[in-house]
Length: 261
Image 1 (cartoon, rainbow, N blue to C red):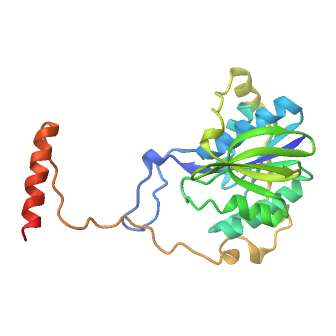
Image 2 (tube, helix red, strand yellow):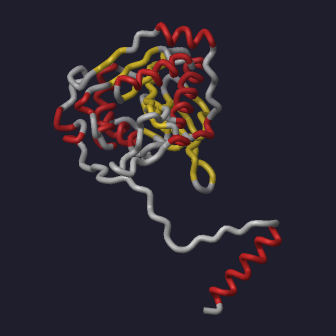
Image 3 (cartoon, rainbow, N blue to C red):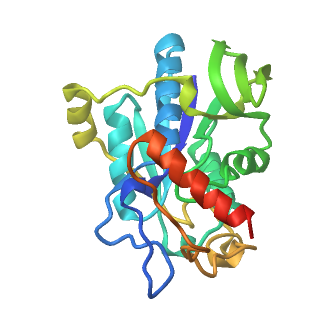
């Protein structure tokens, strides 16, 4: 079985801040990590490989430094890493990103299963996984919380819902996005780290994947982020201190003032 896992390098959420001059995310000096949801997708792919045999290829689209997350994935059990990187990809929205990843998957060759994290923590759109499935014309299921059964022909999973879960069975090849409940990602072993250090990361450009220049980057993005900003605080704020009882008394006094006006 050949499984392709799509991962993304993102800024560490605990260090994210906005540049007040440019109103964009300040990335300089901010540590980059593998998107947390993608870690769970990787773990699930490796677990399926250990059960049924086969190979796991990890794919990412990003700048040259995104190679780091591919080596991290190999250290945790993936077999190969492919970096799709080109200046022409800059400014891509989810539409252009799903197109680029789809062209990369097609260039890699036949696969049985594509795994993605539910969403990336820097964009939070959850659009790339379903968009990729549509581009590849694959059946797909999102928000998978458990893999029940996998065979060479089909996969049966539990899809998380607001009031429980659905059981969904898909013929392979297929695509699924996963949530954090699905597993506990493993820690890379020393042997895995040594393998990752020696691994040859394949690099592919827009030309290599046969991408249409009008469908990638800013040119292929129907949406653009004009400005990112922190909303200004609205209204007066008051912080209560003391014991719980004292804070409740302070809150009641404050509410009575407002209710009498």
